[in-house]
Length: 277
Image 1: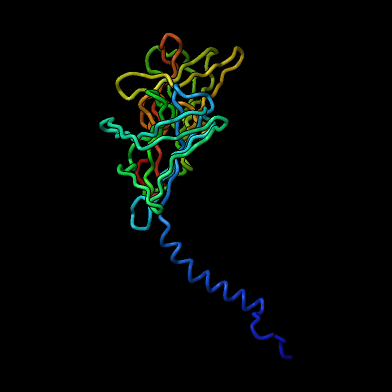
Image 2 (image 1 turned 90 degrees about the vertical axis):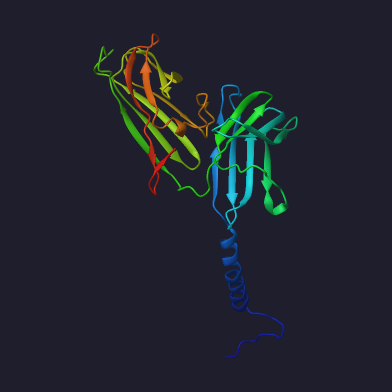
């Protein structure tokens, strides 16, 4: 049997074959051009509103040069927001642009794309990005390194009663740090603890700073406090995200500063080895 194919026409099978060949020819070039990319959620400070959120994205090209850098905010009030890169070692800052949100809007973005000719004079990798309103920093995060090992893991550490004058020897607890998909989660759990309000504090060696509290009602003996970057929960001054608290001393105290439990925030191991914050 001979197929009836008119001159100038292509059968469905031939069309499919031609299309597949074209895709196979084009695909390697697209894959080569694509470089590593990372996202990080911006942490909301105490000066921000209760709903404001944001995210920073960075992408490199195949040569290792910056291809895309963007800072976006949402659920924000109308107005102009400055975007600044801060050197974490010197605290020197560099203004790189602004996000203008018009009346009736609640989101905006500052974007640099080198493919369309945009230039960013400061290398953002390893810098702290801040979204400011006047002198107030509202959102902040460390700009991720696209070449760093991907991390999606969690670590857990016990909280112990102090060796001297414990409030309750039966009290137990733990702190958990989770890292993954550009966000960091910190959780503190109390078990077999006396009722009352217990403050959670961390220290970098100089002094303790309160990061939250747990209320245990009468007749109960357990409670949980948790926060995460993606939700926009504020982080203590000096920390860009909850992962920056890894390795710091942590304690649970009463209103007078007497210690119920104490320990250290655990660190995260990356899939390729090495401590990751």
